[in-house]
Length: 294
Image 1 (cartoon, rainbow, N blue to C red):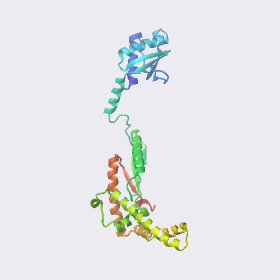
Image 2 (cartoon, rainbow, N blue to C red):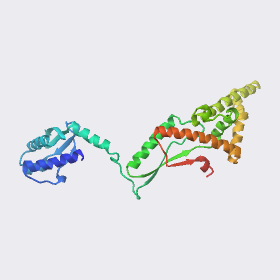
Image 3 (cartoon, helix red, strand yellow):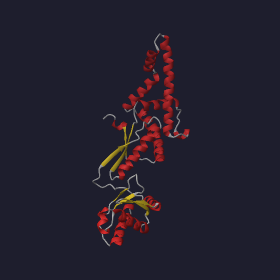
Image 4 (cartoon, rainbow, N blue to C red):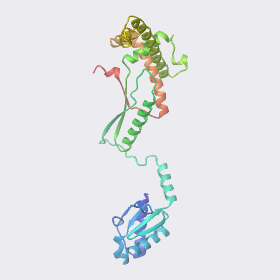
């Protein structure tokens, strides 16, 4: 039972005991005590003056004394004119919190067939590297929001849109193909998303070294640094190979698609492990590879 309901019931009993009068619940006005006064809940005494035939302060004093003697939830009270300020006993708060803790469904509203349908999308990773701190924030906020919306009686679909295609994915694939020597999560002892992320870094390392070497040749020909860098990046054989791999992927090349599926599956296994640790889940996962042509 809510604390307010207990107080209302005790006030009704008190009015009958003190003044021999039965009163309806709607006549008992309980409100939060104003912050400048001591107490948690305040009873408005003015409606009871006709039955008490006494002034507001004396009526409030009598009701307060009755509650303190007969209602365990009331620890102390004070009277301010026609207002009875009640301080709730600590044990009552503890009892309430224990009841809430014991009720797994406390405060939840169950969805029905007519409840609004809400889609909440979060995580949205790329499959060329592990989840990072931004994804942690995104996942925890998204999952918390989904729980809150569901707890308010909505039907919720938790959705994850995965960016699983594009040049950044091909960079990891190409680096593994060139420098991986058949390494797998099992042979390396690494989570799949971390392993693939390592090859994304490896691509960048080799690409920067290649650009630096090309720039040196262009600057020797008299180009300034900005021109040399732009020309070197455009001429990079490694980047050209990554672009060619992306074109083959878009054309459905079996070898490229096979490599893509293998490495993405490594990443998904790593993601799933992280999601499980974080306690987040999804009802529906969409993949950009299935939707990008739309």
